[in-house]
Amino acid sequence: MEAHKDVSKYFDAAQIERLPLDLSAPRYEPSKLSSEARRIRYQRCRAATAIWNAADTRAGRLQALKNYQTENTLADASVVELMGPFLNKASNRLPLTEIEDALKKLGLHSEHNTVLSQFEKDKLDQEGYLNLGQLLNEEQLVQMRRRYDIAIVRDGNKPENIGTRGIGRLVDTVVGPINKEGLLDSIFLHPRLLAAVRHILGTHFKFIGSNYHCALPGYGHQGIHADFLWGVKGAPLVVNAVWLIDGFTLENGATRVVPGTHRSGVHPTGDLVRGKPRDLNESVEGEIKLTGAAGCCFVYNAHLWHGGTQNCTSKLRRAQHCFFGHSEIPSSTNVLQAIDKRVQSRMGQVGRAILDIR
Image (cartoon, rainbow, N blue to C red; front, side, top):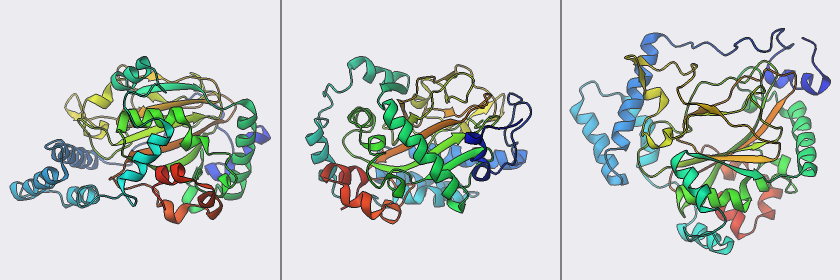
């Protein structure tokens, strides 16, 4: 299929030379894992889930990890390696009073703040996701699309940005030079977004990563997943926000979610279907697609099962992701290493507290 120039400029970053002839034919990377490898991943995830959910304190979880090692002669060393960074010590750089003070300045410290309605808070609690509304205007969207398109041509084929075939991707966007004068500040500082993050994670949280994600025509399918390494029962640890730079429709690769799965304590990798590890590429009973107009922001408890779907249209489907985590867990982004000096110099006390930097 012949591509419009707005699409073809993404080819290099997306590691393709042309678009598929049939954009709607199912297209995703087949699993390269053998059934034995899938079984091992399943067992590792189940073990980590059981250890984490055995207690609600770091000391209790460390003890559960030690018990796992002593009680299992075939204990998987990779489980210990996987969980160690989350259990050995807190990973926040700033005192927790910094984020508390920032939330007070924003009027978000109290759980009874009214930035979100009670209906919105209940939806986050019960279903795990919420459309915060159209928070970006058309002028902002035009500028963002132009900025992303230029950056994709310039930087999209750099090793750190190369990901899944058929996807144009840029990492560390909101702290990088692409945001040198503040165009993307709303992506991680909008009050309604921070109110949702505060509702899910409490008063101790931080920015942990961001990326621009563009599904090209005929691509975009993701296996069902959660944005954490194992299942978590109880207090959540991660939040994801998806900003719709283009509108999300049923046809162009909207995110699919399975409402309520954030409360299950089960990770899809650690789930069984008919006695076998779940095929993550298959649909899940109860899943829905999140559709909305360009400029909207979907925020969700990132333990919620979710995944991108295939873009079956002839146009790009652009989105900006922003991730938050509990203050004490490791970040997926080394903010101090990734942040552009111009971004850092613009940040006041609130921005620095959210980014967990001095």
